[in-house]
Amino acid sequence: MEDGSSEVPEGFVENYLSTLPSKLFYNDIKKNHEDLSKYSQKCEQIVVNNKKDELKEICKKYLRYLENNYTLWNKVTSGYDVCILLNYWIYDTLTGLFGSEDSSGIINVAFGNLQLVGGYLNVDSTKKPFYDRCKPNYEMFKHNDWEKRKQFYEYYIDYDTIKRLSDIYTPQCKDFYKYIEGKAKLYEHFENECLSNEHNCPDFYDKSRDYNPKKVLQDLSCHAEMVAAKQAITRKDNSRTEHEPAPRTHASDVSGHRTPSYDELIKENSNIGTKVGHSVLGVAPFLLTATALYKYSPIGSWIRKLGGHNESSLSNMDGEGMNRFLANTQGSHDVFFGDTECYISYQPA
Image 1 (cartoon, rainbow, N blue to C red):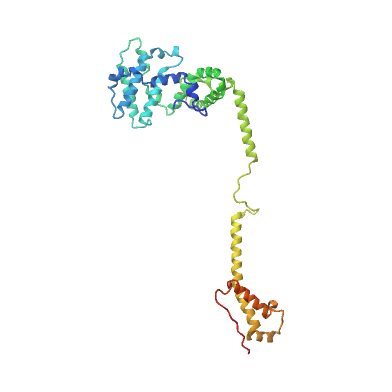
Image 2 (cartoon, helix red, strand yellow; image 1 turned 90 degrees about the vertical axis):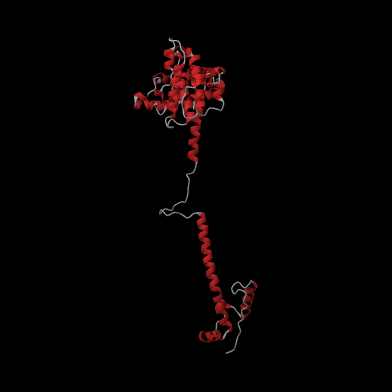
């Protein structure tokens, strides 16, 4: 991962940041230059168990860069140490090829092979110190956060160019703003690292403080606009939070008991209705039978003699009313008696 920026539009880095020092370096060393074959024989000395061809390609690009970019090794004239970038490119590429750095030490073996082949170059004695300085350096990768250190160094050497480009491409100021702002997390990370253990501090940390997004964002022409936009979003979010009703599940009554939900109430009422209906259906045949016996049977005559005859008793139903009632019940598909016809005959006592 070559940059830790976030929220910038797709294509922004390629279109507007391709001239950053770190980008120019990576683009150059990745190229399949026509003269790479010149280094094939030297890279045949590499010994690894797998992916040897891929490692040979890395080897050729590494040796070619050493031989053709001597002037860039002078960090005084270039403004940065190209050997650091070279080491980061090698280790990052090996990690992409073999997997994580925990893959049975194979990355360390490959790294060691590249250290050896660097000594096969025929170099002028005046250049040898620079060749030695650009050999693969294990010490750079003893930290678990080496990827963050890579991104941090890239931003450090790129910032001056980023600022110049932002002044030129003013319509894209907001994108430059977001790109720089995305580096704030790197500064937070290394502030904590340096406070906890000064030996964990990158060598360039003190110099990099001048490029902290907290300090430099205010220098961009769109700073006031970006701050105002963020404040507006914050106010809008706060307003929405204040007006949104609190999420509710089942309410509770004062005593703390949960109030039944609407669906539960509907179900309970339905059950009550069913129970009442069953009770009515069970009582109805009994009432009809008792009424018929009272009006038309000898038992009814006997009861009337004991208690006295009252025409208004037992629902005040006369014979014609009872017949009408029974006819209606039978006309309604015999709700109470099913399909069985019921006849009540009267035999005088």
